Amino acid sequence: MRLGFIGVGNIGTPMCRHLIEAGHEVLVYDVHASNLARMVSLGAEAAASPRAVAQACNVVFSSLPGPREIEQVALGADGIIAAARHGLIYVDLSTNAPSVAQRICATLAAQGVTMLDAPVSGGVVGAERGTLAIMVGGDAQAFATCKPLLQHIGAQVFHVGAIGSGCVVKLVNNMLAFVNATAAYEGMLLGVKAGVDPQMIYDIVQASSGASWAMQAFPDKIFAGDFTPGFMIDLAHKDLRLALELGDELSVPLMMGSVCINFLREARANGQGGDDLCGLMRLMEEHLNMAVRVPPSMT
Image (cartoon, rainbow, N blue to C red; front, side, top):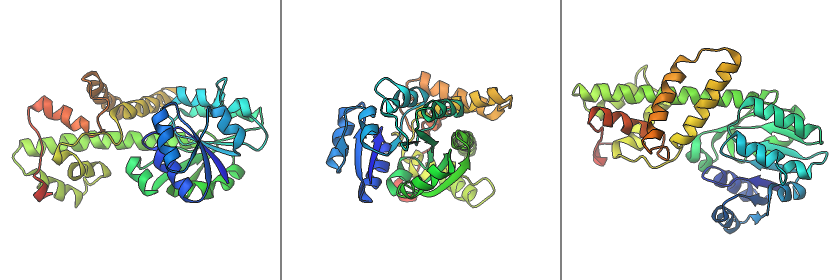
């Protein structure tokens, strides 16, 4: 099958590569020529615009930074809507605002295009390994058509419900991840400041009721002082902002999310927006004039 893929950055590249490795012919578009060149070297064919991708393919995927870029790709003058026809399916793998996904879907549907919102969780590592969780909102028949394709890039593929519901679950998941991470970093700093070995704290917490996915950042990155991006603080800020906006729309108080976003804002104000999410730990370390590090032989 000939597929389209728009947006081949850090996470889009491995997702697109899995589709190529599964034997599909893939036509790609990205605003960065270097990203396009990389995908061509992996066996894809380059296109000149989202419109050109949609004209040549029956299923088009996108992996984009946020709502503004998604809307431009879908509804812009040279976007998917310019090649709209009955039977075209657009699967957006980005993290989007549910209301934006719903509006884009309605606009495309009027032109015969079916849209699925299908954000992913698992980061660049999960994308590389093909182990992402994919949460899909939208038409059940379109989901059934696309599920075998999504299974090439994700180990767990869920049909959540109507359009926008995939985005809702993704925002909930990411808010929990960021709040958990912030709490984990504060807890580690408290223990180390009190004189306990950080490796010991990590081992005990992970064997106890405080265990969480967020703690894994310590042996993977923080203990070595590695804050190079996997999932950037800038993207975390965008996702959490969307979650808080959804809370405003639904009149749901999000106290922990509101506290967490201020850590993200401070990191961005300090020029650390391009750091990995665990760069929040470095921000907190700087507040206390200390660093939590463990020699490689001990991790």
